[in-house]
Image (cartoon, rainbow, N blue to C red; front, side, top):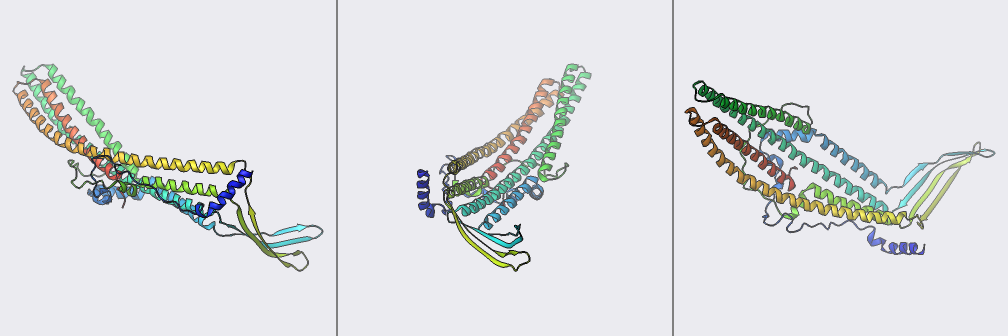
Length: 441
């Protein structure tokens, strides 16, 4: 008991400088947060998404998603809940006023009709800490909504580019089917003239049927992608308009900015720091529980016996309640709040490190896609010549069906790989834009 009173006395002496001290951000990004070799410059995250995505059809889809997406609406409601909580915390400064009518019968009917006033004085910061908690939670809710919005912009753009890729792949397969059919007709003509066997015709037809089966799967995948995109847009399943796919090229003005930009731009990092701030004020409130609760109270009203004149009754009281023994709850709550704050700090550090790693990896993905685009372009040129030459030799009976099938499959595979690389490059660029904190106007 003496130790407890001594602790309270020590904390009372420190209350003036500790309990009312506001949270001060100590977050600082490591110099090499995004990895060595990453050149700093103006961050492309400051570019509005309407500028970053010049495709007008994609812009319209993103705007539709921002207006109708269900997750974004839920995030907006979370902000409203946090605003109500903050308003409630602000009103905690005011006194409470209650009507207190009463009627008693002890040999006669006595009555009392009045109002009671109670005002908790915030000498030790409990109310202040709760208000600041509510402010931190509101800021965190806003940052979380921003994070949902940036992710939504990225997901809509990803779905849009996925559809463009699948459309292009479908076109390539349609073109390949035409070539396969031409090759099959040639094989049938050669067989009729005794220059080929039925085996070559069967093998060529089986290869054609395989491509047609792949096309059917791809057409189904397109429908699935459209349906998934419609969910993001908050609309019922249906067709999604889009422009044809363009070749991928890495923009010249790609910039990542300084490491500290991530802390300012990324909503998840800001939300994580507000988590530390909230935990700090939870600890401050737990600390205030060691100190006395000072309350002013009073009342005024009419009192008397029914049938007799009433008289005015007044009362005023000031009370102080000092916790002495609470079965370890006060101390336990304070220790728990300290550990929660440490957990929030570690979560913040983890979020920052993850952000730096994401940026580093995505820069490499963008550069790799740009290099592979040149490689695939050259490969397609070479395989087109090989296919044309083999096809011509087959017409003259100088190339067998296996050589033709191999050339056709290699040519189609290279074309599909180039399209997939274009999508991967666009995806990496979108994710880099988001990882740097872009996507919000």
